[in-house]
Amino acid sequence: MDTAPDLNTYASKMRALTLGGSDFEVDVRFMDMLCSRAATILDVGCGIGNAVNGLRLRGHNAYGIDPTEAVLQVATELYEPDWFRPISATEISLDNLVGAGLPIAYDAILLSGNVPTFLSPAEFSSCFAMLGELLKPQGALILGTTSAMRGGTKDQDEASQSTPLLLTHRYADWHLNPFSDDSPWSVSIFARTGTREFSQSPDGKFILDH
Image (cartoon, rainbow, N blue to C red):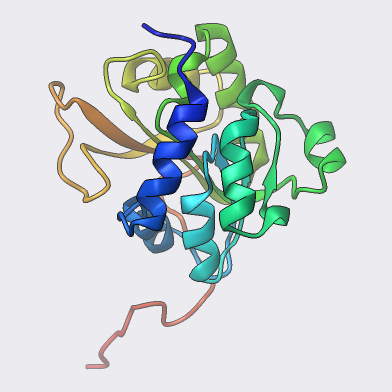
């Protein structure tokens, strides 16, 4: 596995695709459906900020962290610079978030793409536990990853065993297709409870009186 990708080339490619109108918001639509209105959301490994921007456009208080200067530079060029901070997945802590002026409690945390692949098993387990601590009682941790790679479904399930988080749903993609053992990709939702209740009403529920 290549652990030293050309991130400058990646940043340039993603900038061009974004400006060309490519759809990078399928995860945004998934998160928007999953969360209550005006949710506070953290995107870990946010890259050039497409998801953060999409969530902001839908009224959420979204922030992105990424350790890579090349991609964060694109994020701050395309979108509001104050939404982003130079923090890596291994540097996430209450003190570092407070020092960066970020919230320390979230309705949802997104960890998607290649980020888990570049963490050692110990780093991934530690990061998973820390993200769980940042979740509000009804919050959810959403991981979109290649299933069989490091940080995939097996590692996620093992990491969750030492935390209060439970696997509540797992899909083969952001379109809710069923996950199976041979699914090459996965979207997993972990939460403290299998039933997440929101206070807003009707929130899509229209109960008919008899």
